[in-house]
Image 1 (cartoon, rainbow, N blue to C red):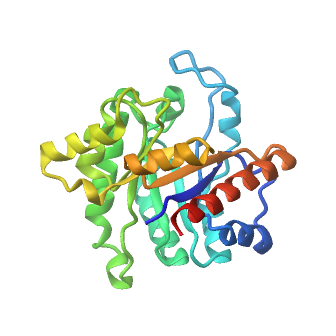
Image 2 (cartoon, rainbow, N blue to C red):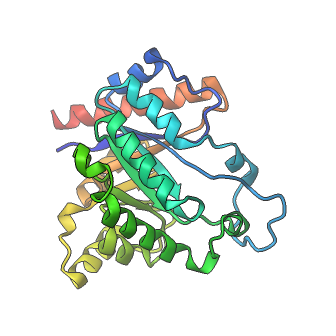
Image 3 (cartoon, rainbow, N blue to C red):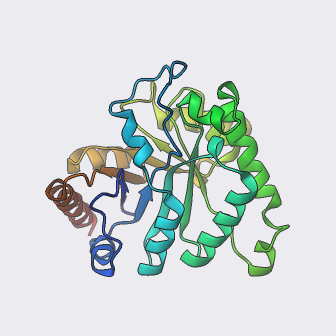
Length: 268
């Protein structure tokens, strides 16, 4: 087993939905490509307490699902994911059909990263109550799973995609243990030992920890640090790439591709 290294493109200004560009990602050994989402950023946000640098750029996110579907048609093995889909801003009936569609197009390569979001006014515009955001996420995932085989999916034998939670509060390990297949964790933001805390949460409810994918978001590009995190229990590593500058994007991708080669060389 070797570390899986993936990329989350945080904007798509210079991203190219062409066979040559996407083949370079796949050919370099990239495990997966992830896209974020956010429906809108209200101009007036007096109730949003969390600070976020250049928050207006979140309003420029593309809808991840058509983008990932385009990548599915251009690739063979690349995994495709959301980091993250905000279930507080989605209609469950529509998202169920979207999941079925992308699983069919991608031949079941989709990873369903989910969260509630932090822009209170945005989720309220969708009819979601901020204090209930994680209840909305959990109930939504459980309903989507429960209803999956009662729709057209059962006739097409399409599997429900793995669900990975993207969040970093103390309450996340218990949430992952209850209803998720993976955790998109950031060591610099999580106030504890993510691996140990998730193991303890799984033990408390009798969940098999080994069935959960532990992902490190925005990790170091230093090989020694990556290998240390891999030995500690992280199997998957996702690097953020901004495409606002083509030259910056190219340099960042080159560094990630080099790390993929170096990590492979360490194990083989």
